[in-house]
Image (cartoon, rainbow, N blue to C red; front, side, top):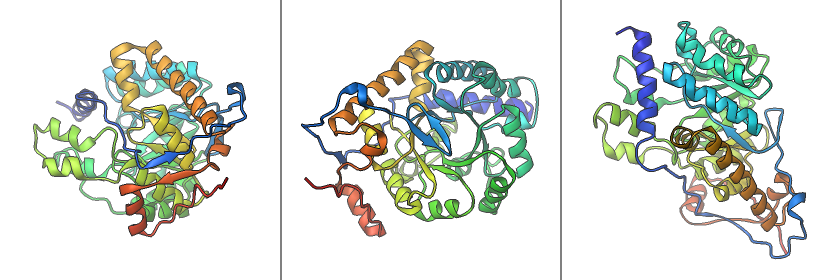
Length: 358
């Protein structure tokens, strides 16, 4: 089997094992919005517009990086691109490494996104192994509006040595070089283990336009790799590693303090958790695992309906807080309790949202 065919098989296995079991959900139970029984608003007044890395978005929903590089992923990316086009959603492709090293199927699995969605906001995607020339090629390949650089150290270490990286020196300097070289914004994204405040600060100081916290609570790539290796990874590590999404989001927001945009992702699959993430200060919410599950099981129309239903519910939640916009939502009372509050206190983070008094 050639290296390209092994990589394609691995991509298909990632989708296969990610779809097994129940859909994971991030825990936002420590985050509480405050009900406003006198909102003085009409639902038609509620506006969900937001901005991300300088781009205006009709709604704060981002179809996050999922797949690419195999025959099967052509159909998935084609369908996701159509949903993004019809729903006017931003979308990121999966890692384009395979397409940089070959042509044919691997490349088609990515270029199909721009073919189906010629006017939409599309983000390219590479790992932090990439140099500036690779980054430029990935962006040009799909005429991307921006580049996601994904970080996945635990997943790489969980892969067999013939597949995964073992050296992670120079990641930050390469990210900085790419930010300086590209004419489009760069977003750095974790893939399910969260971004701590210390790393959020480093990224914000080295040229990135946005970070996507990709916290623990969504698709667990340690679990995916454990399934691929037939249980070769300790279950304690599989279940216990990472920074929970709500906590990672809070750390990142406290640290960057509005200097760059923050995307919330990692198991945010319902409208209430979306609203909580946006109230905390996220510019947008990324959905990936839920999107591919609905798409693969029920089809494009069902996924579009699901996303539009989430939008509709989100607008109702804003009204119930007395918010006509996401900016107003971010200025409404918010309470953080329990494990999340204790974590942030021990880590020295003061999340100062929710100070509005009546």
